[in-house]
Image 1 (cartoon, rainbow, N blue to C red):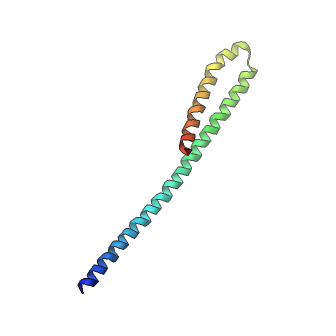
Image 2 (cartoon, rainbow, N blue to C red):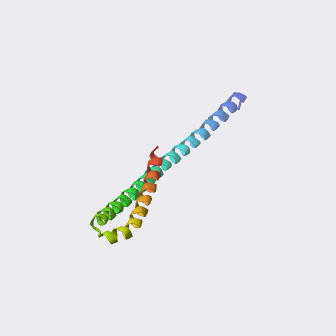
Image 3 (cartoon, one colour):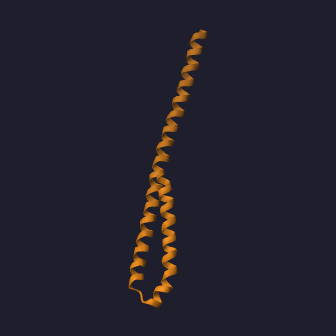
Length: 95
């Protein structure tokens, strides 16, 4: 085997190795993209669930008597805080 052939084989091997690493990087990229979509869907579902809960409590608050209203206020404020935090996480995820 000539020096030129050995050099060519070495470069071919390096190219093959680089190509394999590139394919692995592409696969990891696809996986990360899919995981990101799953996480985003979960975050949005959490926000929607919390939004529905706040709407429910707001309706109950509107129908409550004066005495019940003051008791319910803390729960509504907590639900609103939970919704606001979940929405911020979701919106931060989307930039």
